[in-house]
Image 1 (tube, helix red, strand yellow):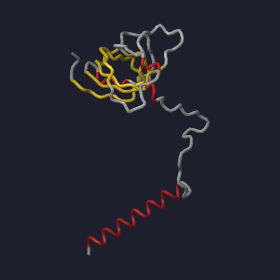
Image 2: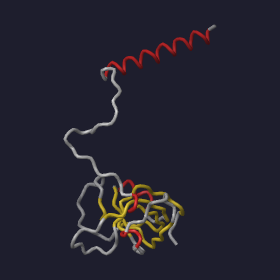
Image 3: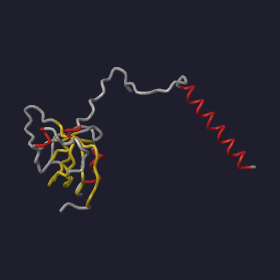
Image 4: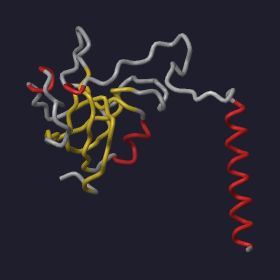
Length: 156
């Protein structure tokens, strides 16, 4: 009998909290929309520019990058001894920018907390190749990182 009473009480609390939540947003289900009015949303990723690579994650050579560690930057970390792997879904990596790519190093675009735990380890990284900036002197392509996974504790 006690169990039935407890279940009834839990059900009543759940129903009350659901009604309270619905009342707070006018009882309407909020779907889609622009989370920041007046701000254009970024374009969806171009699947043809996505690749997966393995290599040694290292700090970039000293730069004059003074941006905040929480601001994405491609000047703080690099992937050295990179090898491309075929571990991305079908239809990815087929753009002209990725098919002709044979680089052994990549500049990694992301925030510090994405990379700092993996410095000096062998990692697998997937992401999107960013188009080269016009007139850019950088020879290593930029990989906008979406996923990092450690696959070995040290680089060999």
